[in-house]
Image 1 (cartoon, helix red, strand yellow):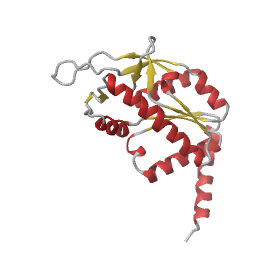
Image 2: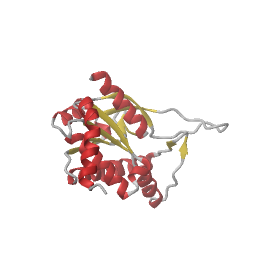
Image 3: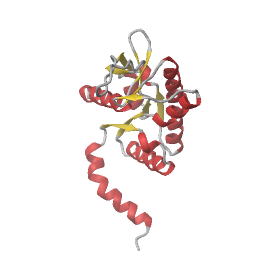
Amino acid sequence: MAKPTTSRAESLIEALPFIQKFRGELFVIKYGGSAMEDEQVIERFLRDVVFLEAVGINPVLIHGGGKAITTRMRDAGQKARFVNGLRVTDEQAIGIVEEVLDTVINPGIVTQLNALGGKAVGIPGKRVLVGKKLPPQTEGKSSAVDIGFVGEVVEVQLDEILAAIGREHVPIISPLARDPDGVVLNINADIAAGSIAGRLRRRR
């Protein structure tokens, strides 16, 4: 039976052509869903991110936080409601979303990555994402529903993200934006990741 160290060495040899091909490239990673709920999955995933950083690939991580937000809303007496996959976010809910994402989940990921030997920095999405509020949504034959403080990304301000990458830190970005008036908007994490990836691709 092969020793674990031998197996790891063989895996690294197999991965070497990919490491060489993508060294210096930017990898935008969306981190959410079940990957944030299983402790073993979390550690394996974050170790992979640290590995990418160590071999010269530049990860940019955009995280979600749906389950934690739903739990905090329930504790506050609010019931989670979704329309077309978007969380209905009223004035009380956006405060909860902002608090959970930017004061609990984001710094938690930074701490975990750094503890595993990585170098990470938290960036609240509202500092780098400019958004606009989505219009009322219809679902099936139901009437239009005002989903509140939920938006889409209209601009990505890259300076802070690129500065972190230049310092060889992994940017950890929450899916929040501000509109031109400074109002905080909840952004679907997949949409946030896609917007950031598209903007970085055009820049690079």
